[in-house]
Each structure stands twice: as C-alpha cells, then as structure tokens.
Amino acid sequence: MTIKQPKHGIDVRWVALPALLCAALLLQAGSRQPPAKPEHIRGTVESLQDGVLTVATSNGSVPIRVGPSTLINRMVRSDRTQIVEDSYLGIVSVPQGDGSQRGVELLLFSEALRGQAEGTGPWDWPGARGSSKMTNGTASIMTNGTVSRSKMTNGTVSSRAGGSSLTLQFKNGDSAGSQTIAIPADIPVTGIEPGQLADVQTGAYAIVVATRDAGGALTAVLLLAAKDGLVPRI
Image (tube, rainbow, N blue to C red; front, side, top):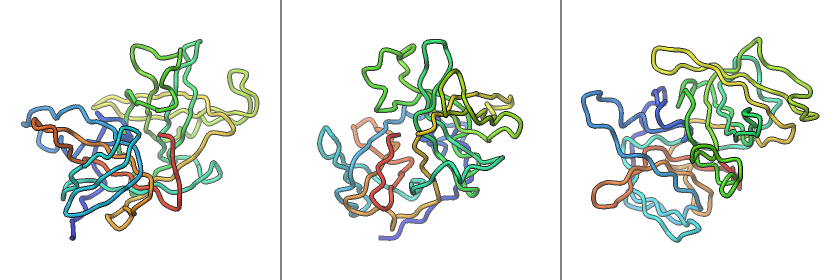
C-alpha cells in the first residue's frame, strides 16, 4: 500500500506537539467546523495493514486509521550538543511551586520541520500523572519555538545546579510570545525528522495524535514513529 506523504511545513499551533505538534491538517480550510479534540495514543506498533495502524497500549490494542493526510515524523536519538543558536525546539515542561516551568523532555526539530506546532499549550506528559503540581488540570506544557539568541544561558538556574535555561520565542496568531524554561542537565533529547510509512515498524514505539469520529473510530492526524529502540517519554 502506498500513501502519499503530505508536506511538512504546516502550522499546527492549536494542538501544541507535538503533539507537539499536530493537527493542522484539520485546519486547512478556515470555513470548516472546528475539529474534535485530538487524543494521544502511546504504545508499541502491532501492525500496519490496509490503512489501519494497531497500537498496543497499556489499555489494550487500539486500531487507528492512517490516511493520505496523516503527517508522519520519526523520532531519533539526539543530545544537547546538537542544539545551536536558532534551533527550533519543543520543550515539555511541568510547573514548579514558584510558578516557573521545568523542562522534562526536549525535542530538537530538523530544519525541514521548522515552525511545526509553533506556540504553547496543554500537554498530557505521562510522567506528570498523579503529580501534586498539576495546575488547572494541566499536568504539563508543550512549548515549540526558536531558541532566542540572547536568552540561552549555561550554569545554575533557579538553584538547580548543573542546569540551564532556554527562552523560546514563538508566534501565537499575529502576535509573538516567549517562554523561559529551566533545563536540567540530564533532560532527555529526542530528534524529530520528516518520516514515511516505512519508518513505522512492528515492535517500535509510536505516539499518535488522532481524532475520533461520531462512530468512535480514530483517524491519525500525526504519527510519530521511534527508531532504533527509542522510547521517548513525551
């Protein structure tokens, strides 16, 4: 089966991903009704057959339709040494007691994906479930943007020895915004690159942003396929 990959240079601010990150294809026509709230499905790929991806999750197997409009990215191993001035990043962060944000996962987008899911918004980071620091029902925040040349600092931040902070600049519609986030020294870094169906391998970890129709069937808007045994926590 051959599915034509859509272009990657698409604005997906409202879903924030990822997932960062991720439902812009549903917003291409401004005259349409707002799309259903996307769901995040995380697990291991069981199969991909006849346009249906089956993902083994902690709650059982979940079938998800994959169509021509599904955006496919692959997740690869990376590290902080790959981050340079003007890198386009996504940072999953959680609120601290003093109101600041602490990063828990960092996404380094390839240049081809610059601008994907730009902005900031709620994100259901699995590691934050049950945390006492949830705010207004939001366990964490996904912020996507460009590293500010003048705001990247190395050293101790908010008394977190060995850490650093990053200020991301991003657009929210016609206005600009920024978010400064403390980055621990041991924060995991995942690279995000353009992908294709061939990257979706049985047994690999996957994160799917999908919408559910009136009949309950899920359709993938974004499919993130991990490579080489990688299991990101986003």
